[in-house]
Length: 179
Image (cartoon, rainbow, N blue to C red; front, side):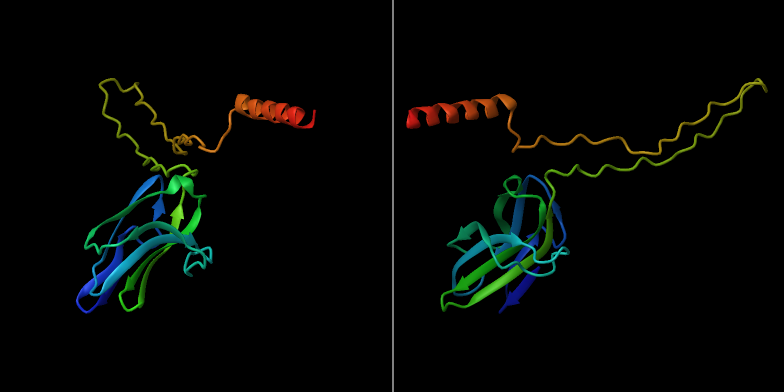
């Protein structure tokens, strides 16, 4: 989405509204306006399920002291964010205190969801004529379900020995403090 101000552009070119994001995401855009003071790229929870309304609370991804034109603005690590629907905001502050905001709405973070797999296309083999009339051509096998996709490892999962170790240290600390 772009806003044009006196021949210059402020906007985010990638990702676009409604994009599905995973992992490290490069955010591209421009913020080259006259009287540029500073800018901030941030994200917030979408107010509605469709992501159409901007959120009220914003979390900074990157701040800028210099304008940029058609360049990478930031690399956003979406693995540190809970899966859900978010909005991106590029806020440009001018020297006179004027604020220009540009939004990308309905961005879906889907790190814990499996990536969609392509459904195999059903194909029926055309039998070739055989020399012997008693031979039957092989029957094609049709796959009704796509192959399963492996789930990525959950980065927040704790191993059982780690839980027992933390519990043991807590008990030991309590005994030392209250003994």
